[in-house]
Amino acid sequence: MAASSTIAQLAPRIRAGEVSSERLTRDCLDRIEAQNPALNAFITVTAEEAVAQAREADRERAAGTYRGPLHGVPLSLKDLVDVAGVPTTAASHVRDGHIARQDAVVVAHLKAAGAVLVGKCNLHEFAFGTTNEESAYGPARHPLDPTRSPGGSSGGSAISVATGMAYASIGTDTGGSIRIPSAACGLVGLKPSMGDVDATGVVPLSWTLDHVGPLCRSVTDAAILLDGLRGTTPRPEATPRAASLTLGIPRGYLMDRLDPDVATAFGETCDRLRAAGVTLTDVTIPHAGDTGTVYLHIVLAEAAAYHGATLDATPEAYQPDIRLRLEMARYVLAEDYARALHGRQVLTAEVDAAIEGCDALLLPALAIPAPPLGATTVRLGESDEPIRNAMLRLTQLFNITGHPALTIPCGATPTGLPVGAQLVGARERTSALLQVGRSVEATLWPDGFSLAAR
Image 1 (cartoon, rainbow, N blue to C red):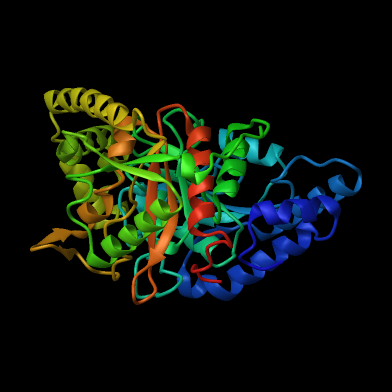
Image 2: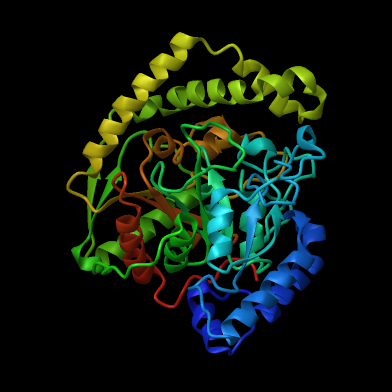
């Protein structure tokens, strides 16, 4: 099967016995062997275990047991997710020697669904960054241009899917860490609604902002994977026609500082949706400009609490910039954290109000194309902005509020770097957002999106 096949394309062929899980898994492992040295997507490759899982999947299918659309499909995991008997490094020497004692809840669910796990992917250390450069195992590199960042923190996961080293990956998203690399690498990425997926057994960054979700090649695949992560049985739902959709564009803070190529691609996307009959309407989120302050005081306080003991015991084991960020985090006052929690309530109510009357919000997922490795600032408008701020600008609000958010490819820059659009749905309605996403995806890419690396 082609490296670019979707899970939805693979599943019926696996079920019919037209393609074996072992063949698919060995193909993925061959691609890892060929491409990982240059791209550094994986920290740990579980080749023997993956082949054994694939053979078991094939035996089960031949005996008449079929576990569903993930049966026999090779997947990768961000190396924050525990797999029993396998290291969970979090891309940090702080965790040298760590071996997980049991599977994370999501891994147990994926195994029950018959998925094959080929390895653990590189990330920004402890998920505390957007470029995937600060890793104890070296930077991950963009699959279309190895001089650029794949986005982060789930950068290795995005590379693994874009290159066919896995047919999908499971990442985490605290401020955009699924959606940012998905947008940068031309993939679909889903941050479910807060609490939709159990994060037990996943190394936290900020427990009230963390989400677990998939990076994949289509919205249908995202829906399949969401069911797998939840441990639920897929339920067919009607996909709305594009002409019946109303999407709200949040003007102001979330739209006023975009790279020109991103703005052009997003504008063309809006034109195509309007031509298909989609109603686009402007909406407002009055305090969106406070997103950064609210986010920072929550993530820093919670990260400092988690890392306090290891920061005292082995500070030298952290990457220098991550250590500095965590040391700074210890100076967040309790009153700052309390104010941020109040700010979260305000922003949540405002996003709820903006979505009311719309099927979803529509905005870019990433304000800039994938940046060069080593870049610290980017020019936006008349001023320079830190890379980290620019990359988080459009995603972190929805971690604060817990609304589900979905990234879909929406074009490319003149140099061929992917651009992603973001759909944001009502809280606790992730499945409804995916149905909207299917309609938008079918309108934009009726034959499938094919820009990502093969």
